[in-house]
Length: 140
Image (cartoon, rainbow, N blue to C red; front, side, top):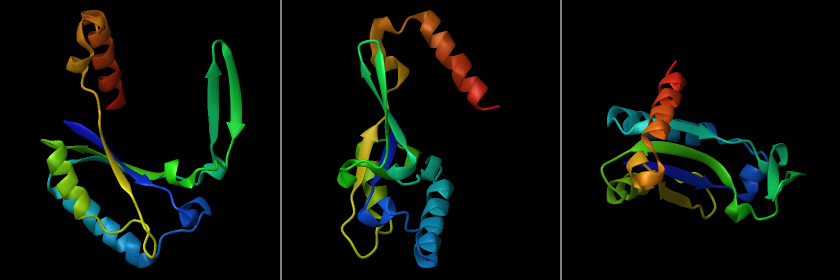
């Protein structure tokens, strides 16, 4: 099972404040532990929403909205993708994480990633082959 582990933004991360050397060291050690356990697929931090954009879809119309975005608690500051056996295992690993926003309350969200099998008959053999080609191309 794959899970996306989402680090929620804070006022500091949205202001572009960079993490301290202490936090970078703690996170580096934590990421190394995840890698050694064989569960880390990827991990990245994100620039503040002021450097981002959203595209709103309304029928055929597309509207671009430049950041920053108002609801900091709904924004993402970074993420991991993990391969674990269960949501409970993901929770246990998150509980071991250094506080990603020292000095303030922080929140990390855990969301399971859909597997191909979960899409049912609508995910035809042709679509499954296409998905496999895309996954193979990403590895190169």
